[in-house]
Image 1 (tube, one colour):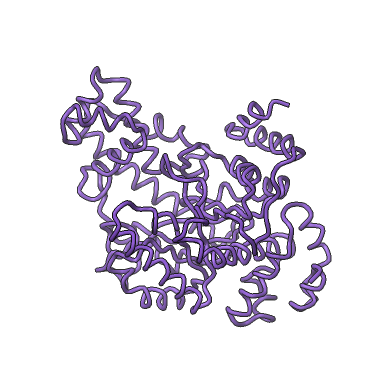
Image 2: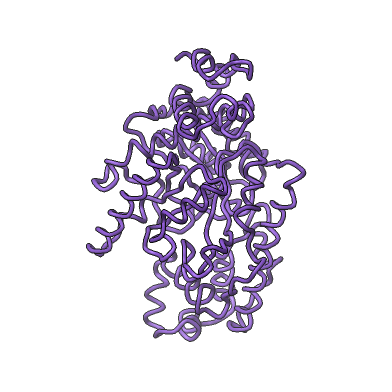
Length: 445
């Protein structure tokens, strides 16, 4: 079997092709996932090509990547859509991967309207998440909320395109013709806009480096040198044109983003977990992290997301020390507040790592907390998807009223359950007639 040729089908735009490839790969012997209480690696924050993945990964190819690399668990988190959830969890089951699925968007937090949180240069605006989804289809009552995320994103994108087109003329793009086809389900991000503009310039001006030097600033030689690194050049175009201070920047206004409460309504209605996203503790809002945590926990947050690589892998020694200190502090706070951790690298920029280096001296002491969070999220996902007994279920509320005991139960479940179809067999003995101790006994505790 030509595995490499077969793997190419994992990013085919036809989901039937991707599914068939997963089935074909399932029988191949690969490194088995290590236990979630050992020395494994997880990435619980991979974006798929349904929002933007810098390596072009589909949900199926991310599941296969996790299997090949022997990750203890893997999770996806896409911007504004749940289009990848079913495919990813199905592929994880077939391939024998512990999987989870989520969604990310930007919300407005009026209590922090004057403080920057984790969206640079945008006071009151925060990247925010829901994790532990088990299906892409949502209850009818909250379907308008999900649709609104996509609508708002499209409106922001089109406003950016109108402004950047005027500035870059004669290099222009058409949103429907040049941008939407870059995504399998019509959910482009700013990074897709950047790619479309770079492609348009390359095909329509005789001297792209000179053109970009004129529009972005700097000499032709400087821009030509930066263009040798596609990742660096894409980030430069995005920063100069679409971020704060750029001609295409759309200043946040009331109604442009959902509120935390609105987003949480969607997440909880789907049986998933509201999750605060933490950046690095440097912003004014994150320096008031206890206040932010208290506010969002009061609104339903039950987990915390961290991107470890951003918090130690920096060149400047003093900044590195500060970020590592902040990282250790937020992990300690999460433990004290009973917030399980969802950690991983996003893969939404070229050159980003596929998974964090948990063996790095800065991260090794935190590995147990990272793996514990992954076990809890997987335990919830498996029980919710198969039995309807997840973290937000009436069963959990009745039997496990406190966050600490609830976290402990789902963490233990996640550590006990093997990945893939074997887990489905084990869960066949579980029903809502059992109490938590009986559930663990049925699973072999």
